[in-house]
Image (cartoon, rainbow, N blue to C red):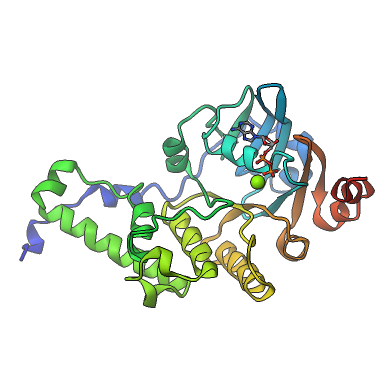
Length: 296
Ligand SMILES: Nc1ncnc2c1ncn2[C@@H]1O[C@H](COP(=O)(O)OP(=O)(O)O)[C@@H](O)[C@H]1O
Ligand SMILES: [Mg+2]
């Protein structure tokens, strides 16, 4: 048994000190103020600010001059017909693709062009349109994979199984179980991820994303393939995540009931361009939006 007295303070202690993150960013107000009225209300730096984001694939401008401002704590929807460029926006925000033009600011910090892993460490986590879990790993290990982005111990400590390794490992197990119980998945912690029913796999993917301790959570069509009951439960889960984790959420969704039910603001993409953006009820009643969806 490791003697607990010999366990020195590890860098997990340093990690917890980074929580406050109160930056005195006073100089940057211009673009945010132009974009939405929301930024002016608090005067705070938005969690996400995107300006003039574009990418082409061959001749196709998949995303063309995309802008958005998302305030801390907002539940924000990104909607639009199939092929409009929504998932591509997520791929740009998470560094899967590098934009041809544009700037991405997270809490005022320029993260444009960074690698996916770096962007995750800066604070953007996502789920995928087609669920991507480590199918052969346990439910618990899937969440721990997310935690690994933040808990660090040196490789040598890991190989030699030094006390700090055990301490971090124990903390990770506890934290992962905590997260699983929030999503009512703790009883299935030993299940293989692929053996969970579909709705629970979606939840597990959200839990894994949250394990990376993000500032901004991106959900790509979380209700896809769900029946109405599962969708209703998912809506509750998303609301709950926002409250419980004080999370800022950007959500791509086709289910208009879900969008109308939980999103405060919307941006509509059409052919890679922003068709309109604003408060949910206004946007959903906009003729141009209805036309874009009906394809008239
Ligand atoms: N890696 C890629 N290479 C070529 N074309 C792509 C690539 N990714 C997306 N596209 C194209 O960009 C457009 C937008 O796709 P996508 O962002 O997936 O749309 P949405 O998520 O709104 O349905 C589509 O025409 C799609 O075929
Ligand atoms: Mg998509």
